[in-house]
Structures are given as structure tokens and as C-alpha cells.
Image 1: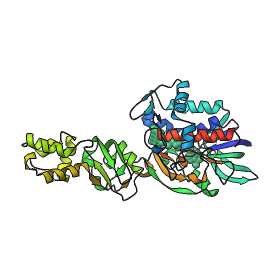
Image 2: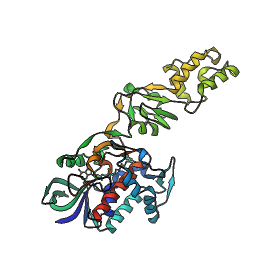
Image 3: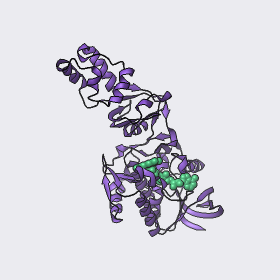
Image 4: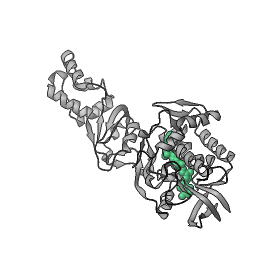
Length: 393
Ligand SMILES: Cc1cc2nc3c(=O)[nH]c(=O)nc-3n(C[C@H](O)[C@H](O)[C@H](O)COP(=O)(O)OP(=O)(O)OC[C@H]3O[C@@H](n4cnc5c(N)ncnc54)[C@H](O)[C@@H]3O)c2cc1C
């Protein structure tokens, strides 16, 4: 059979692309349901976009690449689509928008949009081979175990990244990119918890607090969560995307406070108070117990010299840690790296060197922060490719 466009991957980007690709389009996915990552995202409520989307919220070898697509399909466009479907939503924190009801509403909306546009959806279908001959892609698909030959003019890579293989993530987009000589940027897990050897923080598991988490590249003011295996929480997930194996991170446990001045003043008025009690006014008591051993915090406030107070402040506000590693693709929310943006048009997502080949969503070397930015990239890049295909460019 011939169809104008085959989209590999019925995830966020693939379905959005199909909704705009002008019909005569086949969306293929090996999963039994479309949009599985949308369904589980945001704890089942999907953080589907953010009120404040800027190119600075994205990591890429080329930080300018995402600008065009994000400007042409904005968070307001997606919010208006969600509103048209009567899906109610709320802002949780930091501009992050979630469904009031269920993420399944977003999946159902996208399936309806692609169906209305005239696209077909083949689930439980995998790709066996692809070749480019006489200006067309010749695909051999395996649909529910049966081989099917499909020819198409446009082939869209929308199979996402490597994160969470248990949910069906594969490196298919990268394999096809390689087959057609598109360059790749090395991939690594992003938005992922840090692990530490020997259950270093196991006694603190479940303790959460607001911190400033930094490394040499950047810093985030968000919550940190101690876990049995290491550190998690939004601050950690965010910083993990800017972290490489073996590097140090620094935790400011009491940010936005001039701790030294505060402790020096308290020494004057509350000198008999135990130092640990004073610190417990700022930090959860379980953490203070832990730090008392780790940093040898003893004595009363009055016993501390200025230099000792300064050392303590440094230790609490610039606590250096070296993660042993990360939880890896098993739990990472995203994959950093991927198809090199240099190989793609930022307007259409089409490969510069291979006619009719497009790459969108997480498969491309554009990765968003935590907070709805990754879906907004999927919507925007899917829309850009879909519009270009519909226009016949
Ligand atoms: C647990 C979790 C929670 C998340 N929460 C959020 C959130 O709240 N907000 C946010 O912005 N981002 C979130 N993300 C990130 C977001 O889900 C992704 O960035 C986004 O889904 C990427 O869209 P995509 O279309 O490129 O890929 P995907 O949505 O991953 O879709 C890829 C599709 O391709 C299919 N596929 C893969 N390999 C093959 C193959 N070999 N053959 C056929 N089909 C294949 C898959 O089955 C899948 O349907 C979350 C991710 C995870 C893992």
C-alpha cells in the first residue's frame, strides 16, 4: 500500500504531527495503546505544558534550534486545544499545568485529533526494515505478527528516547538516523535520581526540604528528597540533566538566609542553646541528627568562635557531594542527546540531507527541564513537521 506519510511512534510528538499532517498518514506503534508516557505522566494527571516556556528551559548542542518551533506552536495553542475539549486544568507550581481529571483525557484528545485529520493508527506494529528507493520509503512492517509492505513519501521518526525500556522505549529513531547518515549526539539519562554507595542516606529516606542545588554549570532552587538509594526530588532531577558521571554537586541546605549573621546574633541572645537545636529551627530534625554525626556538630552556641560558625555555615550552605551514579534509563524521565539538530531544518524538522525524512520529539537533541517543557517540545516539533508535510514542503 502507499500512504503519503508514515509516522513511527504514537507518542506525544507523533500524534501531534499526525493531527496536522493533512491526512493520508499512517501512525505506527509497537505498543498496544498510544501515548503511554502521557498516560503515566504527572502522576496520572500529566503536566502537559508550562505557562512560562522559553528556549532557556531546554538543553541542546544548539540552544537556538528549538526557538522556531516553540514560537510557532506555543503553550497557549496547546492550552486552547485542551480548552476546546473541555479538559479542565490547574497550575500546580512554577507555571506547571496539570489536568484536574486524568492524563487519559489528553491521550483521547490526541487520538481524536489525528482521527479527525484522516490519519490511521496501527498499534502492535513494529518496523522490520526500511529502504529509500526512487524517492520513496519502502517499509516492511509486522502488524500483529503479519508482514505488511508500505511505501510512503515522508517518514517521521517519533519513537522518543531510551528512557524506561520497560514501557517500550527503544533506540529505533537513532538506528534509522544512522542508516541515513544523520549524525547523533551521545545520549544519557536526564531528569533522573542520583544514587550513592552503601545506602548513605537510607536513614533519611522520605525526608524532603527546599534547597539550592548547584554544580559548576547551573543551580536550581527546588525540593530535595532523600531516598533509600540516594537523592531525588525536583531539584535533583533538574540538576541531573546538567551532570556528568564523577562530578561533584553542592547542596545549600538553608538557602536565602544569611546564616552566619543569624547564628552570630543568636549566640549573643541564646548562647546556652545547643548548636543542634539552633540548626533544627531551619532543618528537619532527622536531618540535623544525621548532620550532627556527619559534620561533627556539638556544643552550645556560646562555645563557637566566629571562625567555627563560618565553617559550619559553609558546611551547611555548600555541602559537597559526589553521586555514585544515577538510576539510569530505568527511571529517567527523558533522554539527553539524540539526533543532531545540525542535520535538521529548525522550521520543518526535515533532514537536510535526506528528502522526506523528519525527526521530532525526544528523539531529537532537544531536552526540556522538568515542568511540562518536554511535552511542549513534543507538541511544537510535531506541529512543525505536520504543517510542513501538509504544505508539501
Ligand atoms: C514517568 C515519566 C513522566 C513524565 N512526565 C512528564 C510530564 O509530566 N511533563 C512533561 O513535559 N514530560 C514528561 N515526561 C517526558 C515526556 O513523556 C516525553 O518527553 C515525551 O513523551 C516525548 O514524546 P515523544 O513523542 O518524543 O516520545 P514518546 O511519548 O515516548 O513516544 C514514543 C512512542 O514510540 C513508540 N516506540 C518506541 N520504539 C518503537 C519501536 N521500535 N517501534 C514502534 N514504536 C516504538 C513508543 O511505544 C511510544 O508510543 C515524562 C516521562 C516519563 C518517563
